[in-house]
Image (tube, rainbow, N blue to C red):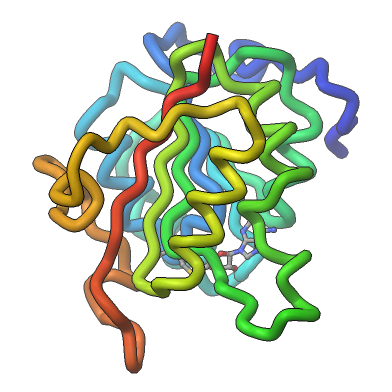
Length: 194
Ligand SMILES: C[S@@+](CC[C@H](N)C(=O)[O-])C[C@H]1O[C@@H](n2cnc3c(N)ncnc32)[C@H](O)[C@@H]1O
């Protein structure tokens, strides 16, 4: 059981040393997370995904490989975020989070002020928060919440920076299959201040 008291040091989770530690929140069926693991075997990864079929697909995908730098949690990512120690992560990915369309459900959105306080606490100064969505009003919401949290700088300098798929981007299943009625994907890169 995770403590949720901000003391969990990632190095205590991994036997091997690693260069960087990244956290992917809501990894779905895990194509992006396994892609990162294969591309950057020198880094360690923590993933959280409560959708059992997604977790199953991810574990099946990596089962024949030896990875000693991955740990997954099969429930709410905020339990992990609240458990992690201060300034222990090099980056967080939240790709295509659920939009929670109805106004009364906005408080369930994962990118929101209260959760951003936790993300800011566990990220190192200069570490990255990387978000994507194809839902225009969720993009607006995530940009506004993240900037107003006061902890992050948006690194975009022109619209190309959020409209064009970044070089070396690893597609997620959601992105590949496309959501019905989906708009154009945006890619939002923030850096933690400090
Ligand atoms: C629209 S899907 C996107 C999945 C994947 N990132 C992709 O792009 O293919 C959103 C995912 O977030 C997960 N999710 C929702 N709330 C979560 C939470 N509190 N902690 C972790 N994952 C969560 C859902 O189970 C779902 O798999």
